[in-house]
Length: 139
Image (cartoon, rainbow, N blue to C red):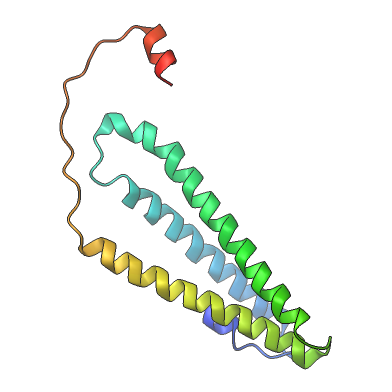
């Protein structure tokens, strides 16, 4: 929602409006992060969640970093494509946020496709007693 608003802001927009939109985007991102993390644990046996937590956290952070880097690349490409006028700067930011809206729509399509797929059935395995040395060596 805020990304589409950023794609339509003009050069005379109040900084307070921008700050409010960034605040709303931050809350939305935080809620999405928590929901995404919880969804990542669905179907996992309890003893596997501790293994999945760092992996899921790393993948989500890398995804956010790559997304930010791609947005910066798109913005720089747009800025280099024309003169450094205020109108061109606004157009470059509009184009960058339009790309971001497209990425969000693609993510929504993937989310819908994944939510309709059947979850993997967790197979219960008997627990094996291992010594502390074997557990550390396995890590």
